[in-house]
Amino acid sequence: MKQTLNLGQVRSYGNVEFLARQLVEGFITGLHKSPFHGFSVEFAEHRLYNTGETTRHIDWKVFGKTEKLFVKRYEEETNLRCHLLIDTSSSMYYPEENYGKMTFSVMAAACLAYMLQRQKDAVSLTTFADQIDVQTPIKSTPSHVHKLFTQLDQLMQQPRPLRRTAAADVIHQVAEKINKRSLVVIFSDMFDNSENADALFSALQHLRHNLHEVLIFHVTDKKTEEEFAFDERPYEFIDLETGETVKLQPGQVRDTYQQAVKSYFQELKMRCGQYKIDFVEADIAQGFDQILNSYLVKRTKMR
Image 1 (tube, rainbow, N blue to C red):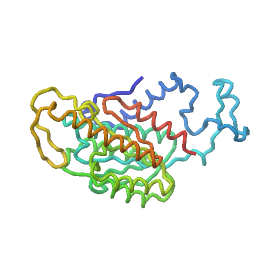
Image 2: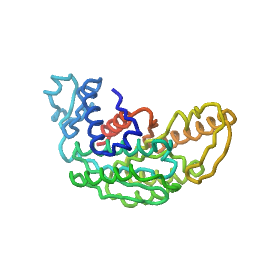
Image 3: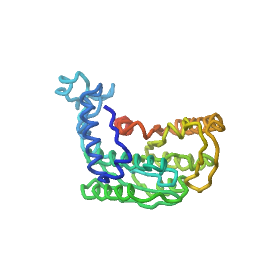
């Protein structure tokens, strides 16, 4: 069952940790009932058997129940270091009525933090726009993760800033600071780099060169930002990062806009594929299962 929340109600409720727990527990319950049945959601116990490796650690009891080969995992195999990066530039506060992309990104990051805590994995949080705002240590202790949820609560409640993004510079800084192989998860709409894609991918390549795994959640309000599905009447469109305005009817620019956005998004996907970076389209209307599923797929690939 798809895990969805009314993003406006999320902001008014304000308890990110509680909501994340409910979403993750619901997701795991659904996982047990899905075709993934047999996948270990304790995460620190099993992984799928790879053909050709030793059979010494196969859990035959699990095989008897699932008819699938799982290998017992040990603590040194399972510890993961995960850095969560959230773009906090002005464009992430669209749509304005519920700060949709920011609200979605905060909740999605909270869900991953809670899941990582269940796995006893280490997690850190970095928020950024034109510079790094918050960067926590990377730890797995309950007190650390609770502080991380508190910071996410604060981020949820802050008003929209007027800030552009220097994502490439920030990612280079992050790459320099991470000294152990990690999973770097980025939540961003990627709009700020539409004219500077080379600089962005140079920064992402810096992470890959340092042997980090990278998972990008491309956060959009697909209905309006990709499909430009506005009613046919006059609008005043406002650039949230510069404050510039333009008055027009959607039909005047819809085809040109859709072509430009499609071309840019296709380039993002292609370049990420070249660098072996996981690029996931995250539509804020589609709930959080898309985030948790993508994370699990990535987690099982990491050894």
